[in-house]
Image (cartoon, rainbow, N blue to C red; front, side, top):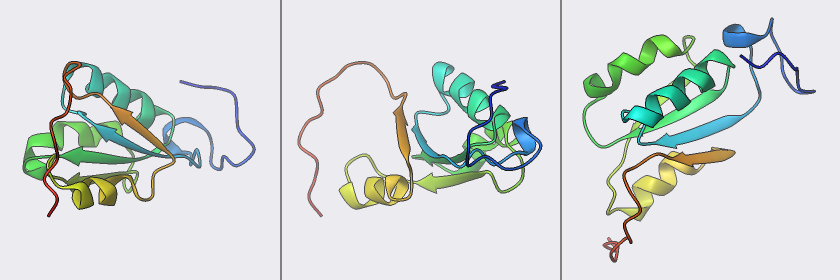
Length: 109
């Protein structure tokens, strides 16, 4: 837990606070992504969690956040518009997806 308060932070601090930062996380269901989401939820960040499947596959992440501090958004890795929708309102984007593979050409739809 981060104990230093920023100038724009409101609330009592910790989970119940509003850190004033919006973060988009890709790969949140993986090993590293779970710990990143735990840290973000503990410090009161608004988090947009991108998932390729159903919301029920990611429900284990919900207890890490206060009500209304997380948003689960569907995206397709081959659709640029759906990825842009996830990161449109985010201040920071965290990528925890897989290994270092070069991305092949995305489908322009």
